Amino acid sequence: MKRDMRGLVLLVVVAVVAFAIGACAGPITTVPTAAQSPQAQATAAPPPSAPPATAVAQPTTAPTQVAQATAAPTQAPSGGPTNPPPTSVGSVIGGRLKTVLDRGKLICGVNGQLAGFSVLESDGSYSGIDAEFCRTLAAALFNDVSKVEYRPLTTQTRFAALQTGEVDVLMRNTTFTLNRNTAVGLEFLPTTFFDGGGILVEKSLNATKLEDLAGATICVLAGTTNEQVLTDTFNALKIQFTPLTFPEANALYKALDEGRCDAATSDKSQLAGQRASLLSKPDNWVIMDATLSKEPLAPAVLQNDAQWANVVRWVIYATWYAEELGINKANVDDKLANGDTNTKRFLGGSGSLGKDMGLAPDAFYRVIKLVGNYGEIFDKTLGPNTKFKVPRGLNTPYTEGGLQYSPPFR
Image (cartoon, rainbow, N blue to C red; front, side, top):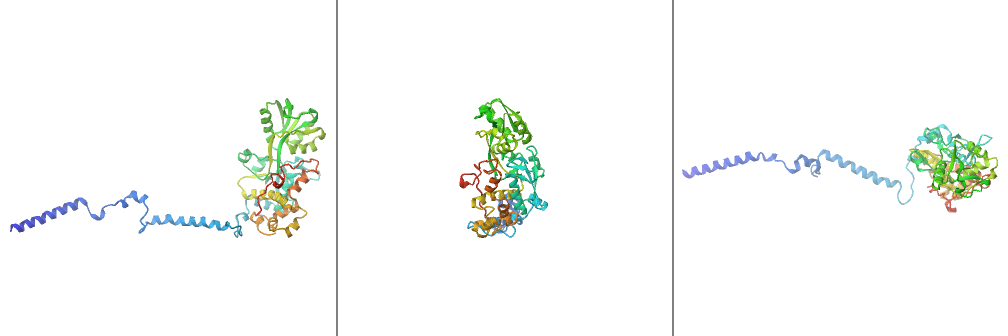
């Protein structure tokens, strides 16, 4: 009997201990684990066997990005050029290019008073190297060099005319500088004339070096790089002088003729042109040997319109490239018919270079046929057979030691 009682007591004790343990620990199924804590859920990767719904959406975008990145090289494999996609970005016409084509003419901002660059002739036409480059654009755009409206601009109004959309392109003997490219917001294109600042003096002064001009009054156009260069150069050399500024060239050279100035400063090519056309006794004046500055004269358009900038850029390059290949107005038809693969592609006989820019396939053929290559343009406007007789200097192909180096047309 005692043995049975001891067994019964033992069973009761075991039951009580088990109940106490269960009450302290709680239900076993609700014990949280580290993997189930809220903090771990925000940072840890989901288990592969049962990924949450939100985790599935994240990796699904990554393969799409990888696919895009690997698909791009198929458009231009390293093995060489391939056919362009059915609709290239360049063939979608918009921006200023569309405006010009819809208008049916180009509005070209020019000087209008600078012989050799752009000047109004008695018959109402414009002559000069800048005017010729306006015509190269009209040839490429319309196959008609008469589709140009020349808009004369002063040094003070030229940038505003471009910024407000009054002109499509500035082709006005304008120096490409950092400030104009950034603060003014201009997109400069290939240099059409590499020039340098100089000084025009009367021969009777016998001035051979800048120091000989101490105390002189020097005429200069207001708002030009020449005005700044004159001040910087003479101040650096500690040469005393008096600048006399003018808003436009005719007034400046009239003052020079009247003896109000002892000398004038501008780009050397401009001094040669104005001496020949505006001074009553041009032979009494000489351009000094000293070069005061670099003056790369380049066309400009507004920034943020890559398609229009490309049209102007590659039309200029076309005049360089044609001269490099020996293509001119006289032989361009023969070159189109019988030239090599590179020549035919350039002139539009094959490929889609013009079309990809939003132009006609034969856009560059038109430029050479209707206007000519760079050498022909230079000789017609500034070269040895003109009254200016400006040497080409740096304005020659790289194959002849010049700075004209066109990218390939392919």
